[in-house]
Image (cartoon, rainbow, N blue to C red; front, side, top):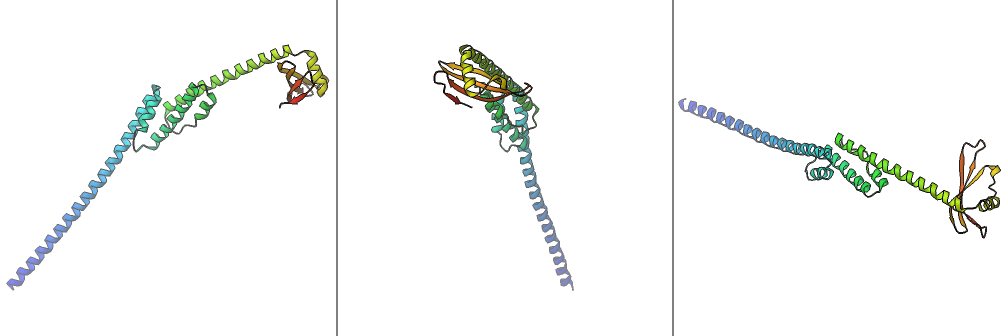
Amino acid sequence: MTVNKFFKNVSVGAAALTLVLTLAGCGNSQSASSTKSSSANSSTQSSENDSTKAVRSANRSIRNNNFQAAYDNLNNTSNRSNEANNLKDDLQNYLTAKRAYDNGDYQTASNSLKPLKSTSTAMRDAYTTLQSKINKKQNAKATSSSSSQRIANQQASDKTSDSVVEAFANKMGFTGEKGYSIIPTSANGSVYKLEVRQNNSDNTVSNMIGIYQYNSQTGAVTKLQ
């Protein structure tokens, strides 16, 4: 009976030791899993922090008008956030528009300023400022062109005698009583370019009929548009 009791105690002791070792193994496994998870979270937070810092730095550069530096900073940042990528795209559009503006290509500059993707107020202000400059240049160019055209028309009118206009009007049936008006736009020797318009019944609207080329020597007429 003593021997049996001894073996029972040994069996119980072995079982207890096995349980302890099993629990220790589980503990180590959970600890390793926790360490890996913590490491992954730390890596993610690190990349997010780098991206956030890059966006903050880029906004400072934008406020100081250092747009290329802002773009380079974001472009060199790995694992960019959505906001960082959006701001990078906005900067690329801005730089393209600015180059076109500096080269006097105001239409391309305006087309390059696509709708903003980022939430950056600094970028929005920069877009607004550049668009305002583009609009002023476009308006000035249009005004200058219109003024130049008026001068050209006046010079052409001075070179075009009333007899030429009358001969053209009679040939084409563009008489004054029908509400037609004829405006010389260019004159080169005996070849004239004439713009024809017709007023409505109450003379409130002048509609374009066409632009014609008229040779006063041969009487030939060509409708240009």
